[in-house]
Length: 151
Image 1 (cartoon, helix red, strand yellow):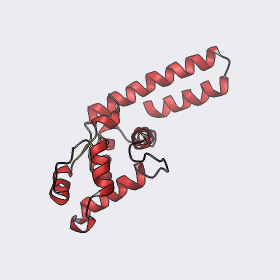
Image 2 (cartoon, one colour):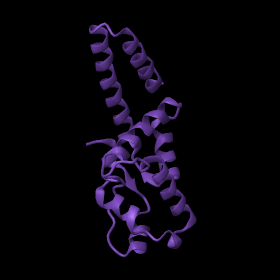
Image 3 (cartoon, one colour):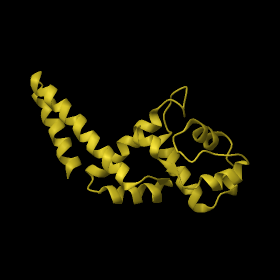
Image 4 (cartoon, one colour):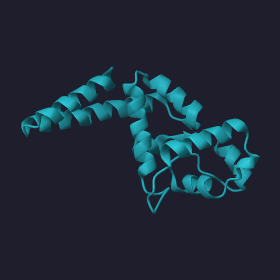
């Protein structure tokens, strides 16, 4: 299960009241993405919910794919955002709080920690293969990223 599949939108119940039908709470489910992209009346939202959804759109749904929002770009951008936040110095608890405040996304700190650990293991494999293949620059870049993630 990817990290994006665990992300819940905290204001899903509020959105249900606005659109008039059930909205899944998982932020990157197709039904949720279609609901917030097509049928939401932003004039009926409180300021915080509107800001969080606007931030969500800008950060994750701004691709030009024909199948947007179901193209997978949002999930990849979300995963990258978590890595970038970690590399900027935030710990898993800080990242969880930031995601909730900025995007309305509720994600357990332990899920974030597991995702970061899995990412490091994957990057270590990339580094090892790069070294074996004589790609020293790639191995060095990968080692630098691992170091930033591990903090």
